[in-house]
Length: 363
Image (tube, rainbow, N blue to C red; front, side, top):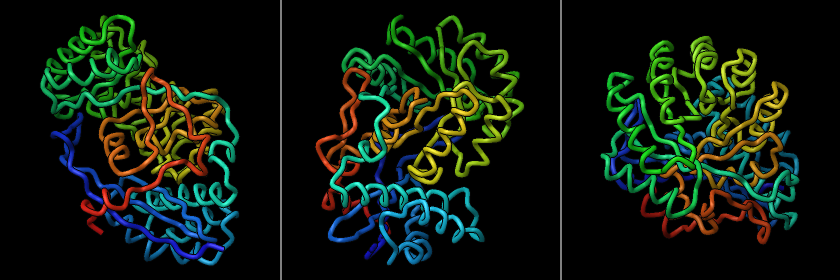
Protein backbone atom coordinates (compact mmCIF):
# COMPACT_ATOMS: atom_id res chain seq x y z
CA UNK A 1 0.00 0.00 0.00
CA UNK A 2 1.13 3.56 -0.67
CA UNK A 3 2.32 5.17 2.58
CA UNK A 4 2.93 8.77 1.59
CA UNK A 5 2.88 11.29 -1.28
CA UNK A 6 4.96 14.43 -0.99
CA UNK A 7 6.06 17.26 -3.28
CA UNK A 8 8.58 20.08 -3.36
CA UNK A 9 9.39 22.90 -5.76
CA UNK A 10 12.86 24.11 -6.72
CA UNK A 11 13.73 27.25 -8.68
CA UNK A 12 16.99 27.02 -10.64
CA UNK A 13 18.50 30.06 -12.40
CA UNK A 14 19.46 29.71 -16.06
CA UNK A 15 23.15 29.81 -16.93
CA UNK A 16 22.36 32.90 -19.02
CA UNK A 17 19.12 34.64 -20.05
CA UNK A 18 16.93 32.41 -22.24
CA UNK A 19 14.10 33.28 -24.59
CA UNK A 20 12.14 32.12 -27.61
CA UNK A 21 9.70 33.71 -30.02
CA UNK A 22 7.04 34.58 -27.46
CA UNK A 23 8.54 34.27 -23.96
CA UNK A 24 11.74 34.92 -21.98
CA UNK A 25 12.94 33.62 -18.61
CA UNK A 26 15.91 33.64 -16.24
CA UNK A 27 14.96 30.71 -13.99
CA UNK A 28 13.09 27.41 -14.25
CA UNK A 29 10.93 25.80 -11.57
CA UNK A 30 11.14 22.04 -11.06
CA UNK A 31 8.37 20.32 -9.08
CA UNK A 32 9.31 16.89 -7.70
CA UNK A 33 6.78 14.34 -6.44
CA UNK A 34 7.75 11.34 -4.30
CA UNK A 35 5.58 8.32 -3.52
CA UNK A 36 6.61 5.71 -0.94
CA UNK A 37 5.48 2.14 -0.25
CA UNK A 38 7.08 -0.88 1.45
CA UNK A 39 10.35 0.98 1.98
CA UNK A 40 10.72 2.00 -1.66
CA UNK A 41 10.43 5.51 -3.09
CA UNK A 42 9.31 6.53 -6.57
CA UNK A 43 10.22 9.92 -7.99
CA UNK A 44 8.54 11.99 -10.66
CA UNK A 45 8.83 15.58 -11.75
CA UNK A 46 7.46 18.31 -13.95
CA UNK A 47 8.54 21.80 -15.00
CA UNK A 48 5.70 23.93 -13.66
CA UNK A 49 4.84 26.74 -11.23
CA UNK A 50 5.40 25.95 -7.56
CA UNK A 51 1.61 25.82 -7.19
CA UNK A 52 1.79 22.32 -8.68
CA UNK A 53 3.60 21.14 -5.54
CA UNK A 54 0.79 22.50 -3.36
CA UNK A 55 -1.81 20.83 -5.57
CA UNK A 56 -0.03 17.49 -5.19
CA UNK A 57 0.20 17.79 -1.40
CA UNK A 58 -3.25 19.26 -0.79
CA UNK A 59 -5.38 17.59 -3.47
CA UNK A 60 -3.78 14.57 -5.15
CA UNK A 61 -2.03 12.92 -2.20
CA UNK A 62 -5.29 11.90 -0.52
CA UNK A 63 -6.52 10.13 -3.67
CA UNK A 64 -3.43 7.90 -3.80
CA UNK A 65 -2.35 7.34 -0.20
CA UNK A 66 -3.45 3.97 1.17
CA UNK A 67 -4.09 2.45 -2.26
CA UNK A 68 -2.31 -0.47 -3.90
CA UNK A 69 0.88 0.77 -5.58
CA UNK A 70 0.34 -1.60 -8.52
CA UNK A 71 -2.95 -0.08 -9.69
CA UNK A 72 -1.65 2.93 -11.60
CA UNK A 73 -4.50 3.24 -14.13
CA UNK A 74 -6.97 3.49 -11.24
CA UNK A 75 -4.84 6.17 -9.53
CA UNK A 76 -4.57 8.12 -12.80
CA UNK A 77 -8.34 8.07 -13.29
CA UNK A 78 -9.02 9.14 -9.69
CA UNK A 79 -6.53 12.01 -9.88
CA UNK A 80 -8.09 13.18 -13.13
CA UNK A 81 -11.56 13.20 -11.55
CA UNK A 82 -10.22 14.95 -8.46
CA UNK A 83 -9.08 18.02 -10.42
CA UNK A 84 -12.31 18.42 -12.40
CA UNK A 85 -13.20 21.75 -10.78
CA UNK A 86 -9.60 22.97 -10.85
CA UNK A 87 -9.32 22.38 -14.60
CA UNK A 88 -7.51 19.41 -16.12
CA UNK A 89 -5.12 21.30 -18.49
CA UNK A 90 -2.36 23.43 -17.00
CA UNK A 91 -1.04 23.22 -13.45
CA UNK A 92 -3.38 20.38 -12.43
CA UNK A 93 -2.31 18.31 -15.43
CA UNK A 94 1.34 18.96 -14.65
CA UNK A 95 0.81 17.86 -11.04
CA UNK A 96 -0.91 14.63 -12.13
CA UNK A 97 2.01 14.00 -14.49
CA UNK A 98 4.62 14.23 -11.75
CA UNK A 99 2.70 11.85 -9.48
CA UNK A 100 2.04 9.38 -12.31
CA UNK A 101 5.75 9.22 -13.17
CA UNK A 102 6.55 8.69 -9.48
CA UNK A 103 3.98 5.86 -9.32
CA UNK A 104 5.50 4.06 -12.30
CA UNK A 105 9.00 4.53 -10.87
CA UNK A 106 7.79 3.16 -7.52
CA UNK A 107 6.13 0.12 -9.09
CA UNK A 108 9.29 -0.75 -11.02
CA UNK A 109 11.41 -0.38 -7.89
CA UNK A 110 9.05 -2.59 -5.87
CA UNK A 111 9.40 -5.23 -8.60
CA UNK A 112 13.17 -4.61 -8.78
CA UNK A 113 12.87 -3.95 -12.52
CA UNK A 114 14.25 -1.23 -14.77
CA UNK A 115 11.30 0.84 -15.91
CA UNK A 116 11.99 0.07 -19.57
CA UNK A 117 11.66 -3.65 -18.78
CA UNK A 118 8.36 -3.04 -17.01
CA UNK A 119 7.11 -1.13 -20.06
CA UNK A 120 8.71 -3.48 -22.60
CA UNK A 121 11.39 -2.11 -24.91
CA UNK A 122 10.74 -1.24 -28.55
CA UNK A 123 14.34 -0.21 -29.18
CA UNK A 124 17.73 -0.43 -27.52
CA UNK A 125 18.80 3.17 -28.19
CA UNK A 126 16.80 6.40 -28.25
CA UNK A 127 17.64 9.09 -30.87
CA UNK A 128 17.83 12.68 -29.68
CA UNK A 129 18.39 16.21 -30.92
CA UNK A 130 20.18 19.10 -29.23
CA UNK A 131 17.78 21.92 -28.39
CA UNK A 132 18.61 25.47 -27.37
CA UNK A 133 19.80 28.28 -29.62
CA UNK A 134 17.71 30.79 -27.71
CA UNK A 135 16.77 34.13 -29.26
CA UNK A 136 18.56 35.81 -26.36
CA UNK A 137 21.89 34.27 -27.41
CA UNK A 138 24.43 36.31 -29.30
CA UNK A 139 26.31 34.77 -32.21
CA UNK A 140 29.15 33.52 -30.01
CA UNK A 141 26.81 31.72 -27.62
CA UNK A 142 24.86 30.15 -30.48
CA UNK A 143 28.05 29.07 -32.25
CA UNK A 144 29.54 27.58 -29.10
CA UNK A 145 26.45 25.58 -28.22
CA UNK A 146 25.80 24.19 -31.69
CA UNK A 147 29.46 23.39 -32.27
CA UNK A 148 29.66 21.53 -28.96
CA UNK A 149 26.67 19.38 -29.83
CA UNK A 150 27.57 18.58 -33.41
CA UNK A 151 31.36 18.60 -33.46
CA UNK A 152 32.05 17.86 -29.79
CA UNK A 153 29.38 15.29 -28.92
CA UNK A 154 28.53 13.96 -32.37
CA UNK A 155 24.82 14.88 -32.19
CA UNK A 156 23.50 14.97 -35.75
CA UNK A 157 20.34 17.04 -35.16
CA UNK A 158 20.07 20.48 -33.53
CA UNK A 159 17.35 23.09 -33.02
CA UNK A 160 17.35 26.85 -32.54
CA UNK A 161 14.60 29.27 -31.53
CA UNK A 162 13.23 31.74 -34.07
CA UNK A 163 10.08 33.88 -34.31
CA UNK A 164 11.82 36.50 -32.18
CA UNK A 165 9.60 39.15 -30.55
CA UNK A 166 6.43 37.45 -31.82
CA UNK A 167 7.65 37.34 -35.38
CA UNK A 168 8.66 41.00 -35.68
CA UNK A 169 12.37 40.30 -36.30
CA UNK A 170 12.37 38.00 -39.36
CA UNK A 171 15.68 39.40 -40.61
CA UNK A 172 17.50 38.35 -37.45
CA UNK A 173 15.72 34.99 -37.52
CA UNK A 174 16.99 34.29 -41.04
CA UNK A 175 20.48 35.48 -40.21
CA UNK A 176 20.63 33.13 -37.22
CA UNK A 177 19.37 30.21 -39.33
CA UNK A 178 22.15 30.89 -41.85
CA UNK A 179 24.72 31.13 -39.04
CA UNK A 180 23.53 27.83 -37.59
CA UNK A 181 23.91 26.04 -40.90
CA UNK A 182 27.45 27.37 -41.31
CA UNK A 183 28.38 26.19 -37.81
CA UNK A 184 26.97 22.66 -38.03
CA UNK A 185 27.96 21.95 -41.62
CA UNK A 186 25.98 20.25 -44.35
CA UNK A 187 25.62 16.79 -42.81
CA UNK A 188 23.75 17.68 -39.59
CA UNK A 189 19.99 18.27 -39.56
CA UNK A 190 18.82 21.79 -38.70
CA UNK A 191 15.54 22.31 -36.83
CA UNK A 192 13.77 25.57 -35.91
CA UNK A 193 11.08 26.39 -33.34
CA UNK A 194 9.03 29.59 -33.61
CA UNK A 195 6.97 28.94 -30.45
CA UNK A 196 3.88 30.24 -32.23
CA UNK A 197 5.50 33.54 -33.10
CA UNK A 198 4.35 33.85 -36.73
CA UNK A 199 1.08 34.14 -38.59
CA UNK A 200 0.37 31.31 -41.02
CA UNK A 201 1.23 33.19 -44.22
CA UNK A 202 4.32 34.71 -42.57
CA UNK A 203 5.46 31.23 -41.52
CA UNK A 204 5.05 29.99 -45.10
CA UNK A 205 7.18 32.86 -46.40
CA UNK A 206 9.80 32.16 -43.72
CA UNK A 207 9.82 28.46 -44.63
CA UNK A 208 10.53 29.38 -48.25
CA UNK A 209 13.43 31.58 -47.19
CA UNK A 210 14.83 28.94 -44.82
CA UNK A 211 14.70 26.16 -47.40
CA UNK A 212 18.08 27.21 -48.80
CA UNK A 213 19.55 26.20 -45.44
CA UNK A 214 17.82 22.80 -45.54
CA UNK A 215 15.66 23.27 -42.44
CA UNK A 216 13.90 19.93 -41.97
CA UNK A 217 11.78 20.58 -38.84
CA UNK A 218 9.54 23.62 -38.29
CA UNK A 219 8.08 23.52 -34.79
CA UNK A 220 5.06 25.60 -33.83
CA UNK A 221 5.28 27.95 -36.81
CA UNK A 222 1.97 29.35 -35.52
CA UNK A 223 0.18 28.92 -32.22
CA UNK A 224 -0.61 25.28 -31.49
CA UNK A 225 -4.19 26.42 -30.87
CA UNK A 226 -4.45 27.44 -34.53
CA UNK A 227 -5.03 24.03 -36.09
CA UNK A 228 -6.14 25.39 -39.50
CA UNK A 229 -3.02 27.58 -39.55
CA UNK A 230 -0.75 24.66 -38.69
CA UNK A 231 -2.30 22.59 -41.44
CA UNK A 232 -1.91 25.44 -43.95
CA UNK A 233 1.80 25.76 -43.14
CA UNK A 234 2.24 22.00 -43.25
CA UNK A 235 0.66 21.83 -46.72
CA UNK A 236 2.95 24.56 -48.09
CA UNK A 237 6.21 23.71 -46.29
CA UNK A 238 8.92 21.18 -47.17
CA UNK A 239 10.01 20.89 -43.55
CA UNK A 240 8.09 18.65 -41.18
CA UNK A 241 5.68 20.68 -39.04
CA UNK A 242 5.54 19.68 -35.38
CA UNK A 243 3.42 20.71 -32.38
CA UNK A 244 1.69 19.20 -29.37
CA UNK A 245 3.93 20.12 -26.44
CA UNK A 246 1.11 21.87 -24.56
CA UNK A 247 -1.23 18.88 -24.66
CA UNK A 248 -2.59 17.94 -21.24
CA UNK A 249 -5.40 15.59 -22.21
CA UNK A 250 -6.17 13.06 -24.90
CA UNK A 251 -8.80 15.24 -26.56
CA UNK A 252 -6.08 17.78 -27.36
CA UNK A 253 -3.95 15.24 -29.22
CA UNK A 254 -6.98 13.76 -30.96
CA UNK A 255 -8.04 17.15 -32.32
CA UNK A 256 -4.53 17.90 -33.55
CA UNK A 257 -4.18 14.57 -35.33
CA UNK A 258 -7.67 14.68 -36.83
CA UNK A 259 -6.97 18.17 -38.19
CA UNK A 260 -3.91 16.79 -40.04
CA UNK A 261 -2.04 19.71 -38.51
CA UNK A 262 1.35 18.05 -37.90
CA UNK A 263 3.84 15.65 -39.46
CA UNK A 264 5.13 14.62 -36.02
CA UNK A 265 3.19 14.88 -32.77
CA UNK A 266 5.09 16.24 -29.78
CA UNK A 267 4.20 14.80 -26.38
CA UNK A 268 5.42 15.94 -22.98
CA UNK A 269 4.98 13.35 -20.23
CA UNK A 270 5.46 16.08 -17.60
CA UNK A 271 2.29 17.76 -18.89
CA UNK A 272 0.00 15.15 -20.47
CA UNK A 273 -0.51 12.87 -17.47
CA UNK A 274 2.87 11.23 -16.97
CA UNK A 275 3.84 7.95 -18.55
CA UNK A 276 0.19 6.83 -18.58
CA UNK A 277 -0.76 9.87 -20.64
CA UNK A 278 2.32 9.49 -22.84
CA UNK A 279 1.47 5.99 -24.04
CA UNK A 280 -2.16 6.93 -24.64
CA UNK A 281 -1.14 9.97 -26.72
CA UNK A 282 1.41 7.89 -28.64
CA UNK A 283 -1.36 5.41 -29.47
CA UNK A 284 -3.53 8.24 -30.81
CA UNK A 285 -0.63 9.35 -33.03
CA UNK A 286 -0.04 5.79 -34.23
CA UNK A 287 -3.70 5.54 -35.16
CA UNK A 288 -3.15 8.52 -37.46
CA UNK A 289 0.10 7.10 -38.91
CA UNK A 290 2.22 9.67 -37.10
CA UNK A 291 5.49 9.45 -35.22
CA UNK A 292 5.94 11.16 -31.86
CA UNK A 293 8.72 13.23 -30.37
CA UNK A 294 9.30 13.79 -26.64
CA UNK A 295 9.25 17.45 -25.60
CA UNK A 296 11.87 18.51 -23.02
CA UNK A 297 12.58 16.71 -19.69
CA UNK A 298 15.00 14.41 -21.55
CA UNK A 299 15.98 12.02 -18.77
CA UNK A 300 12.40 11.48 -17.66
CA UNK A 301 11.38 10.55 -21.20
CA UNK A 302 14.12 8.03 -21.97
CA UNK A 303 12.43 4.84 -20.65
CA UNK A 304 9.04 5.68 -22.18
CA UNK A 305 10.64 6.68 -25.47
CA UNK A 306 12.53 3.40 -25.60
CA UNK A 307 9.20 1.57 -25.19
CA UNK A 308 7.39 3.51 -27.96
CA UNK A 309 7.39 1.95 -31.41
CA UNK A 310 6.38 5.12 -33.29
CA UNK A 311 9.01 7.34 -31.68
CA UNK A 312 11.10 9.69 -33.80
CA UNK A 313 13.33 11.22 -31.10
CA UNK A 314 13.51 13.07 -27.79
CA UNK A 315 14.44 16.71 -27.25
CA UNK A 316 17.74 17.16 -25.43
CA UNK A 317 16.71 20.57 -24.10
CA UNK A 318 19.65 22.55 -22.75
CA UNK A 319 17.86 24.07 -19.76
CA UNK A 320 16.31 20.83 -18.51
CA UNK A 321 19.33 18.64 -19.18
CA UNK A 322 21.48 21.03 -17.17
CA UNK A 323 19.02 20.90 -14.26
CA UNK A 324 18.60 17.12 -14.38
CA UNK A 325 22.36 16.57 -14.50
CA UNK A 326 22.87 18.87 -11.51
CA UNK A 327 20.04 17.61 -9.30
CA UNK A 328 19.75 13.89 -10.13
CA UNK A 329 22.17 10.99 -9.97
CA UNK A 330 21.91 8.81 -13.07
CA UNK A 331 21.44 11.48 -15.76
CA UNK A 332 22.35 10.26 -19.25
CA UNK A 333 25.05 11.54 -21.61
CA UNK A 334 24.04 12.29 -25.21
CA UNK A 335 27.32 11.55 -27.00
CA UNK A 336 26.71 10.27 -30.50
CA UNK A 337 23.09 11.45 -30.57
CA UNK A 338 21.76 8.31 -28.87
CA UNK A 339 20.98 7.41 -25.26
CA UNK A 340 20.04 4.16 -23.55
CA UNK A 341 17.51 3.68 -20.76
CA UNK A 342 18.87 2.39 -17.48
CA UNK A 343 18.87 -1.41 -17.40
CA UNK A 344 21.25 -1.77 -14.44
CA UNK A 345 19.01 -0.12 -11.83
CA UNK A 346 15.34 -0.32 -10.90
CA UNK A 347 12.85 2.32 -11.99
CA UNK A 348 13.94 5.11 -14.29
CA UNK A 349 17.34 4.99 -12.62
CA UNK A 350 17.42 8.60 -11.40
CA UNK A 351 17.66 9.64 -7.76
CA UNK A 352 17.26 13.24 -6.54
CA UNK A 353 20.34 14.64 -4.86
CA UNK A 354 18.68 16.10 -1.80
CA UNK A 355 21.62 18.29 -0.86
CA UNK A 356 22.05 19.75 -4.32
CA UNK A 357 18.32 20.44 -4.64
CA UNK A 358 17.70 21.89 -1.20
CA UNK A 359 19.50 25.17 -1.87
CA UNK A 360 17.02 25.84 -4.69
CA UNK A 361 13.88 24.93 -2.75
CA UNK A 362 11.01 27.43 -2.83
CA UNK A 363 8.06 25.30 -1.66
